[in-house]
Amino acid sequence: MKNQQQAYKYAITAVLLWSTVASAFKISLRHLDFLQLLFYASIVSIVTLFAILLVQKKLRLLKKLSKKDCFHSALLGFLNPFLYYVVLFKAYSLLPAQEVQPLNYTWPIMLVLLSVPLLNQQIKLKSIIAIVVSFVGVLIISTQGKILDFKFTNPTGALLALCSAVIWALFWIYNIKDELDEVVRLFLNFVFGFFYILVFTMIFSKIIVPNVAGFLGASYVGLFEMGITFIIWSKALKLSETTARVSNLIYFIPFLSLIVIYFVVGEKILFSTIVGLIFIVIGIIMQQYEDGISPQKP
Image 1: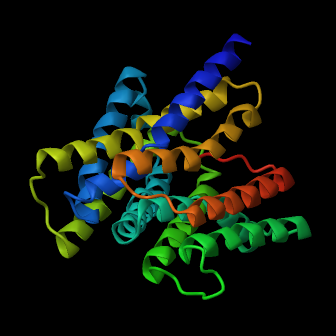
Image 2: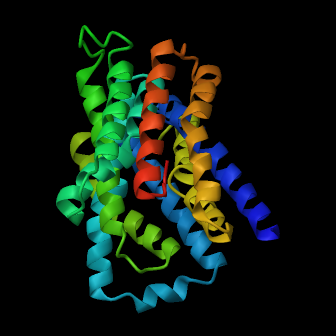
């Protein structure tokens, strides 16, 4: 019981931190472009993860890595942090945070769809219904409630937000068989991913010295979106008697995010956003009860 109480504390901490990152993205993008934000946030994340490895005395594990481990991490690093955050941050630069966050949250549904060709799984009728329910929510949010007009407020931004969900689902699938220590794995992903980010930033943007607000924003993103919150969440899953006891808390994140977005970013939360988000979450819950998929990241 003591471990379960600790698990809840870790899980609630992770949920509260993740609920703030959509606002952090939007505020940071006022001072940096999406590539510059990713560049500096990745540096902070790498330093943070290295410090965690040092404190946990896991640096020795880096010496045991094989060429296969490094190659696999290089591939995963291309998906996350590089491609995932390039697409996600660009979406945040085009759309209000209240629209991107719920659309990105559809990744468990994307996971189900991708599991058919990649994992040879079959989709049951209940899963199909769940997917339809979630995508009704996507349409409601993307059209700001004008679903019958079928006019998207920003088609490019909406597509990018959904693509970020697809990329995360792909990362999740290819990450299943990775047996490396979770902190080592995350550290390697960001080290390899940083080289892609560096090249991409130099070609399509420029490396600048950020102002104080930009640096603080990127640091916050690097710490709490890309770094320690994953470790906190992983700790919660390990301490919990069952994964379901803490994983269900993830469903609070998008709703808490809307509250933070309203007060911190200053966006007026549309009724269509709330309705669409409810549809998305209902679809995800239906799917997870069907397949038993436990969210590893909101």
